[in-house]
Length: 339
Image (cartoon, rainbow, N blue to C red; front, side, top):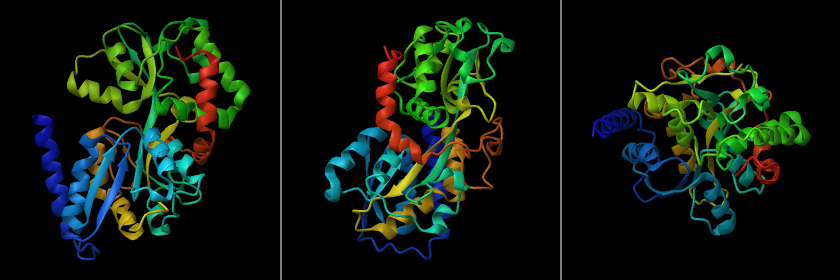
């Protein structure tokens, strides 16, 4: 009830602020946007309602996993009802961009964020960011024994200690980035090393954080915000985030992105929605509710996180993630890391 009250309070605040600056809205009440969202309904729905309140443009949303929605759009082709695709993963966006399913966004939209957080061809723009970290149980692990690089985790001293989620989109994006940086041979060697170490499998990041918190495993590879949420619910948990070096592959910044479908009949209004999600108020809501990094300059990150400035994506071509997604899934399967 406390969380619901907080969300409703934020929604009302965003709606009121957005309404105050909606004089140039093009909404006339006759348009309904269809959004395919890989983000959880609990997070994104209040902001979609605030957008409708501010503009008069109705929104209908479909919520599923980002990869599943990208595949659905592939199947639907030009008949897809989707106007906007919001993805947890740049890989799913890159997949559709590679098939010319996405329009090139206006420069005024992509220029809102650092160039490293949007597609180089302008087909999608980042909305929020999260950093890959090593979560650990400080009752089981001495901080002095934590690795400097994610590449060190194949060492025998970490055998059986590092939880992974090979079927999770964020882990797959991380592996695709490794392929982009180190090549397939080195990436396969790392995956096989983790498999040889008997890295315990979990279905998703939150399950890894829960396992670390209860002492089932000493550490695990996750996105930074899962442990922050766990500590918010129970501050007594012995789990901590270990941020690897900013230039280490283990510190990859993964963005949530938004795109407009080429097949949409409401492309202007669809871009208007993405612009709304990049407004200062919406970005502050994301930071408060999910503890992810806002990507709009000037909006404060959640308290206690290192500055995102140190975690540039200049060395990682996020666009390449989509091209390599299917190959990454195959490489993970062949390596034996996925139980």
